[in-house]
Length: 145
Image 1 (cartoon, rainbow, N blue to C red):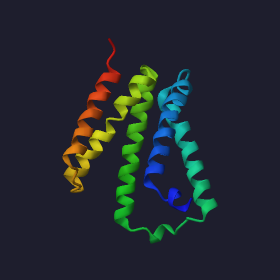
Image 2: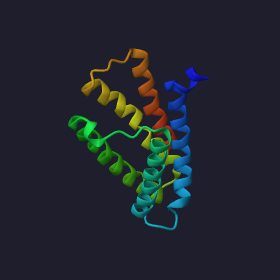
Image 3: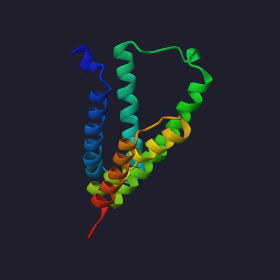
Image 4: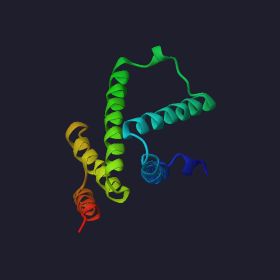
């Protein structure tokens, strides 16, 4: 059981499952309110949940123990997340969840490209084929005949 809990594949699959639920639940939640306000409500829930998890698991650490570089990149990541969520909720307000979510998942493609460019991560040819297929899949799912 311990090896399963430490499996990145398990956590990635759970992330995908919860992301799918996010799209469906958010689509219903944003129907009668402004998408930016909906993002704020969601963010407050996430903040409370994350704080509860850190407190319950005893993972709190002193803010002064965190390196400045970590803070810089976490702040930048937070700003990117905020922009992503605002755009995502606006897209859900305007479009079908079944078309918005796949386009949002182009982030998989962009992560591969950015990781190769900026983190010097190397993917094999078969991995790049997968990236191409994901892109094709997004286009096919998002296409409205």
